[in-house]
Amino acid sequence: MTGFSDKALIAERKMRELFPPTPLQRNDHLSARFGADIWLKREDLSPVRSYKIRGAFNAMRKVMATKPEQKLFVCASAGNHAQGVAFAARHFGVQAVIFMPVTTPQQKIDKTRIFGEDSIEIRLIGDYFDDTLAASQAFCEEAGGHFLAPFNDVDVIEGQASVAVEMLDQLGKSPDLVIVPVGGGGLAAGLRRFLAEAAPGSAMRYVEPAGGASLTAALAVGHPVSLSKIDTFVDGAAVARVGELTFEALADIPMSHVLVAPEDRICVTILEMLNTEGIVLEPAGALSVDVLGDLGADIRGKTIICVTSGGNFDFERLPEVKERAQRYSGLKKYFLLRLPQRPGALRDFLEVLGPDDDIARFEYLKKSARNFGTVLIGIETKAPENFARLFGRLDEKGFVYTDVTNDDVIGEFIL
Image (cartoon, rainbow, N blue to C red; front, top):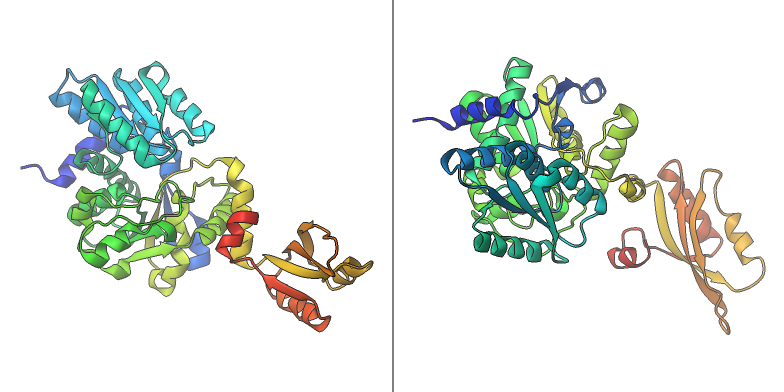
């Protein structure tokens, strides 16, 4: 009977029809910073800039091997899975109907269309993914297509395991630790199952975004559960419910082996990798690198592989990423200032600012028949400790203000 690792090896060999192995690169910057031998498995350099092409290819390949008459495939995705399906459909010369939410950024729609060319049809349905998914499944059943799930599929899991096949061959030995991002769990399940057979001495750590920790929730109760709310910023890994099949491979993971990364801190990592290394990572692709600091002394002197799972970053999001990174790092704050409605009041405030304090936002509406008006002010500075000095001077001068930097309600409305 063929074991899982044998199936993953076959999938990896078959994948060479489509693209060469993605690079495994030692990162000198991270290695020096954390005192470890740190390697990046660059899935952001696949033909579709994510590992999703692997599962889509393998699932499509295996369906066609057993049902050669199957010429129609269907999926629902707002991003990387759609692009993987499109690329594989063009390769195999079959048709794929790809359902995407109406709110999908045009960049992702265009890239999917480029990868699939005449082999795909894109249907924009639903404001939310659940509506898109329901429409795609209803169409698939009616049209007699084969539905390609993004992660909850044994052949998809098997295909994602090809990442581990490549990295062991490229490294030439078993790493001490592999760090892998988790969304629906397909990549994590595939790597865990393969390494358990091929490199049982390699430990693993799993990373979820704080706003979509579905694996953590499932481990807490022993079965997959649906999160009542998710933060979609880490769109490649913000999944409300980990897959049933993927959880089977992950159910006995110790809770301490699952790390949670705050969304704003991920933004710091994205900018660091971009500015220091010239590596473009999407939020999900930065997860494994982001938690290196959390592991601290546990990784010193060890060989670590971080799977950078995707690089489909829309640069229109860069201002938001910078904003969130600055706020997390304590370099930018917003506050509401109660300002007297009299000549010279604004000048009094400006004199309180330090030499490194820069006004990034200023909104003031003078109100008639009132003695005071409220100003929304955003301040950027060069060091977090500058804010303590600024607030001290504001207190000394008798200004009334409220720090709203971390107020989610106000943040949704004004930031």
